[in-house]
Image (cartoon, rainbow, N blue to C red):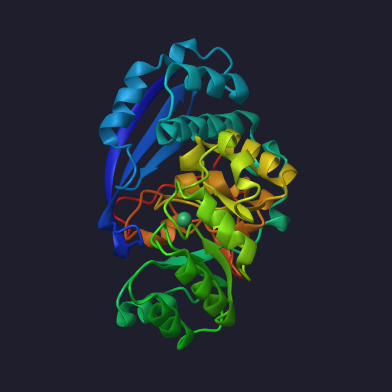
Length: 343
Ligand code: MG
């Protein structure tokens, strides 16, 4: 088995600003092409700048691990357990490997991933389109560009949060999710906002406080009229017990937990614990999006619009019909490369 990494620096359609203070015009992607005997598969590590993984740590990861030691390439439980022992953390590097192995698995079996994973695409909820913090003019433009989506996910945590929502309400009556990315500090303010957001037709309030403030999440959950979701506060299975009394639901992302296999484990654990689930994404290409889409039917809410945030990317986007992303029916991820000279 051989890993080929390609470092991509992809331009975004619009500058992307979050409530945690980060802002960017490009995003870093490590694209993995994994070769195994006569097959090859694609995987991806999508790395926002406020998290510790980057092109260098991804390269280091693939130098540290010995792919020849993977005896059974589709025994994902053993592969992840071994990787976690050898190299803790590095979830984005692991996600790339997990996705590429799933792609090869599907190609060898000549089946689409959702068939192999026994998920039912007909149960997949419509995906939300994310709108980052911006001035009112750009917010209006982004809202118009999101016409094909049924839900919008609005990033909050700016001094003018109410103005952002009011601006969107001048353009659309769509149901809204909100995500503060840990940008609020005052819990009374957060509670006032939760009531105000409910009046504005908002159905989810995600990560209002910085990730370690679990007690404040629990305080807000006990009082909020709308469901509170954890994203940065919930990374993996170890976090589930403390989420149970702190939030109503969790945001599961392949890049946070290490790929398709660990994400399926998180869905199972969250459901068993009575937590709602949202399948989320980083700013990522269709490679990671098709991977997420293969298990999207497991989620109560879906927010995997990564490819729509990119101005350029190597692969065609999944089809979007009536607000719902469609799984590929082709073997594996079903990725189709965009021809280099295409416009
Ligand atoms: Mg989030």
